[in-house]
Picture 1: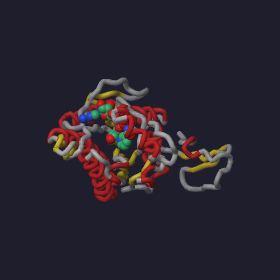
Picture 2: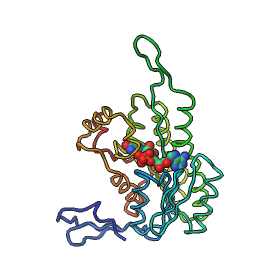
Picture 3: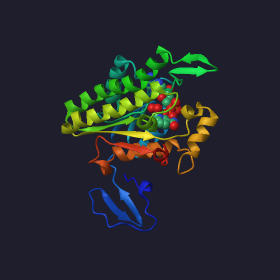
Length: 279
Ligand code: NAD
């Protein structure tokens, strides 16, 4: 299987001789090494997770798609109803996935939620509201603890098997730069970057690579929940002048999981149309 379109070179093929890279008809073809591999994608029922599950399936992977919402499996894969905050359900889902598909090669920790609000909202001379404990805890539970729970379970199996693997975590551009009204979300996404760096150090000797992706504004249900005015301001702030599509992030996950990224670990890849430069 090749991952060609990502590296289309418009007719100029660099004479690359790197392992896994071959020139063919003006395109740089990169062997992903992913065909037949088992991949878990959390939050796979919608948005970026769905596009990611589909992209890995197109590459010949067997995908176990996890979500709290019902969804159809990708071709050659399975769908499992899993809440990533529930360690017991995560553990039994991995067992079931490995029984059905084989040992897990890659985990994409994509599931995430928003519960936005200012920590203290001041309006017309008074305190108009505060971020509740529930708002804070809910976001931390899914976006941070869910990533911890799934990684702990999958990494233990990867280490035991000795086969290595890949763990990819959903951060966000706001995890790098902060954002108004998102104390809980930013804490979770900055925390994901921290965990990524810890795990890259802890798991490297087992041949397990760990990286994070920091999407900018991506056209999904999550972003549609953000007020139109704020969304438009973000788009206007993006040098490429558009929102990203879920497939833009799916391609980044695929590339990071592939053999083409075999020396990349502990990295945070911004996939954001250049928005971080404007923040
Ligand atoms: P989305 O809301 O469209 O999809 C998220 C999916 O996660 C949903 O299907 C939801 O049911 C699932 N989910 C929620 N809680 C879950 C749980 N406890 N267990 C399992 N599944 C659960 O969101 P999206 O825009 O596709 O975002 C995907 C990831 O990318 C999230 O981590 C998000 O924070 C991150 N991200 C998104 C954007 C963006 O602009 N859309 C930007 C930066 C980062």
